[in-house]
Image 1 (tube, rainbow, N blue to C red):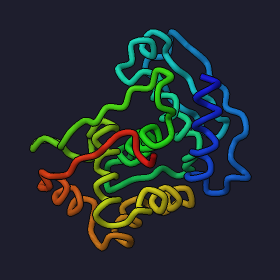
Image 2: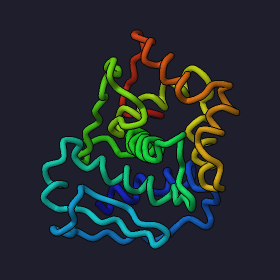
Image 3: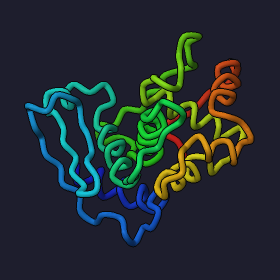
Length: 192
């Protein structure tokens, strides 16, 4: 974990922190077998809590750690919502952070969730689906969309507002176009 922290965290801070000089220098991690989830990050401390048995069985290997380190840097004070969906950007961006800044090897497994199914919605999609959607928006509208939405959320601007101002489209319109794009492919890891 120290190796992944040393490799990933400085890169995540440099790109995603609103003010890298003020980003947390120390992150506490604790294993808690009683924790009822996989892992979570609490702000502003920052503390990452993980369930050891679920972590051991993770299909993504150690990629979850860069995902949680991205949450540390997000540090949203008021949330980051798109309409009634408050979680998809937060989680999708954290997986985007994993795909971009986890080291190759070291037990990290990158998994492309593939094209969305006709029944999928960004509003309740697993983090990989949200991350893949962000990559699509990045390729078709703005290479800085993830950074702009993230920084907007860090100062209290809702994600839907930033998406609309940067792309000229609502998130629903973007999702519809993304689902219709059957030729879109990604190569993981990103940004290498």
